Length: 388
Image 1: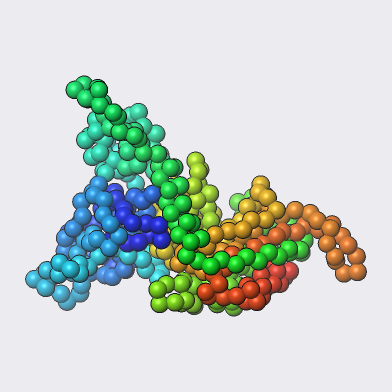
Image 2: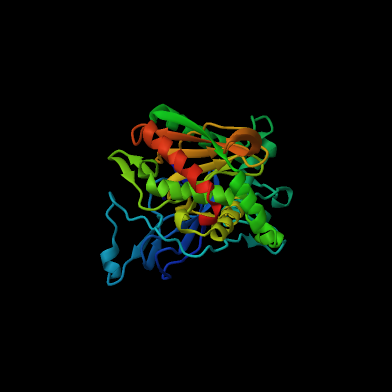
């Protein structure tokens, strides 16, 4: 069971996508695990043949518990007896994930789409699947939907106190609370704020989109994400992870994008190698990851690979925000809502589009001077949108 975030202690196996005897390669999706933040597709980190499945559907397992046993190339079945103290987990993140694969729930003869784990629990509790609204991909019923419905009422237990139903949104808030409390308790945050003149980027974007159909137009968020990634590539002290061994710089920028989920909650899947994407590539990646986050189809690598997080309030937020670092990362960049303001422009004062950007950074990895240079570089990048 891989760790899919600093706040994760356990996960529930929802589906197996492989069986004993199947050959797998690095990057293949082999299982679906349900966590407090939704259903996550689990990738394999090493190729071979599935020897046996160690975990059962519906089973809740702590992080690090074995899911399956994989026989590597050249290994005989007799060599695969696992040592009790150090079992080899099958699922973990990989540096280069394969193309996304849609995980669909099974549909019964009655036409109800539900995951196997959800069906098993519903049968155990006597829950009518027809009466549930699914929150999984394409409206499928997942384990948390059945848990939220509560246990079936038995005639012989009418006097018993009913079990409190589990609210998936409340569970996600608990996960967020745990991670953010840990962050503020253990990470010495420092904060910087900077106002950026966004008019050049706004004008360039309008000209670029003028001849494009709506589905191909760029949003300001793509420019902000690319500028942030490029600036982070040169400011290595804000891009990486802080672990028990100290700060480890990242060689690439895997930009975590804070996504607000429908019905409440927040998740920040990573866009890998964000610094190397074109603006069109960044826009496509952002649309893809937001859609899959809201549909519950994220991959394990997207939950663990982030080296820096970007949060943007868009056009319906407030002027500025101060973020909280998501461990083990060491920085979070937050953009407020763009708005017109009177700012110096040449020898005059003019009303121009502006935005306030903030940096929350870990003082163990960087200091104010480094953070200020980083924000200044984001500003410089946005003054030349044609170069992004």
